[in-house]
Amino acid sequence: MSKQPKSSVSSTNASTTPATRPAAASRGTTASRPVSVVTQEQIAVRAYEIFIARGQQDGRDLEDWLQAESELRLGRQ
Image (cartoon, rainbow, N blue to C red; front, side, top):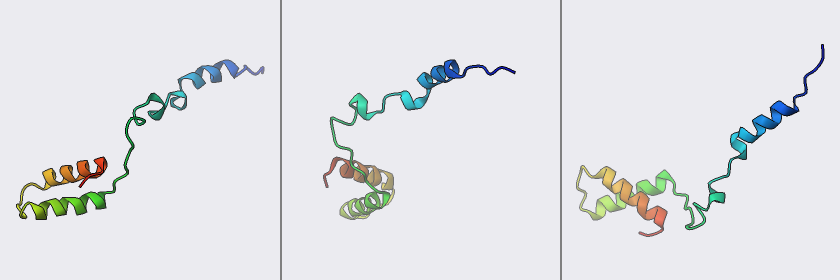
């Protein structure tokens, strides 16, 4: 049995693998603003603070959560 060269197959596959695609950072999407890592615990604490400041009104938990997440990611409170 003769062996077929694998170089043509592997060079074709190498150009289409996800590893060769440009990363998001190289496209400049994160260079314009710093990415802040915010934990769910931090969001929960801030959402609770918003809930307290709003007079502990029920039914707006999602709104409080989204506001807290936005504030923390933008670095303001």
